[in-house]
Image (cartoon, rainbow, N blue to C red; front, side, top):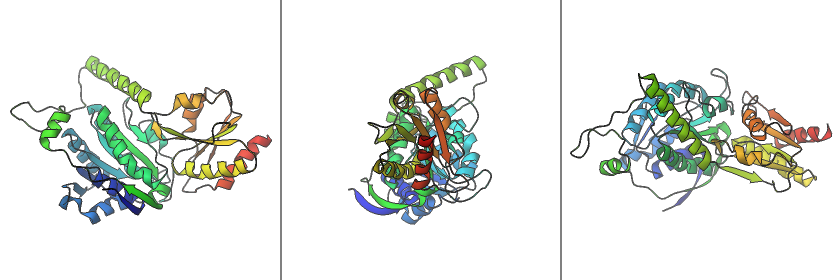
Length: 359
């Protein structure tokens, strides 16, 4: 049955993983996402659902454990924060090359380097644009509430298995640490080995009477075959871009000044829009929920009726590149961001809008 709890965003990820029948979690502690593994260990799901929870010796070890579990057709996941995700990038690229499903959670913090433990959104490039090597994409979901942190566990895993591709929940320290009411789903059952063989015939589960073991790999020594594989990947990505775009609009029917923001920046921007509307400014908010695939087509539909677009991010300007591509430079696109762990206020964003109007 469904259950209502007051949870941090990180805790919601853990509870959702148990409820959605995740087979294995492999992680390594790093602030501000350590509560994910801490909550899983506290709940001891290996005693109730059989879920494996393991602290690996490093981030690199954790992502390679996810690789192994995914190759067996299991629902597996890991989590980290910005520097840890950097270490996982090779494994993520290997998973994409081997066409394996898996869920990665990134609760972003300020950088570069070890940086700060405070919130940031400066991992857009290293996740949405593919931080590892090769021409690959991962599906990237950007929650802006604790409820979405929980819901995106199921969404991310479903999309990962649908397209045999890694998926990521790209959150930040604000959403990871804030507390809200969450509706958790009823407990799902984990698939048996027979069900895995039937549902995922590509999985490597050893030899059986009915099938030979599959070989999972991302290596291809023949350049022409490797190109053919890459062309197939690109075709898959175009299918994802066509069918899996998610976004949210707020006060956009008569909008003249549009804010584009994701995650915690979108929550703050929504309040700025409400204040702006109260003083007669026709502001609106467009929130991409999927950062890949990015909602290019929908954002492009605004280009004829807007006066300005303001991209608000907790970084020096990363998503703004995709926004400019979407509107084809037909209208001015400005950026407002704080970085290093500083979170802007709605009033700061409102002042930026006012400044653009008065130019």
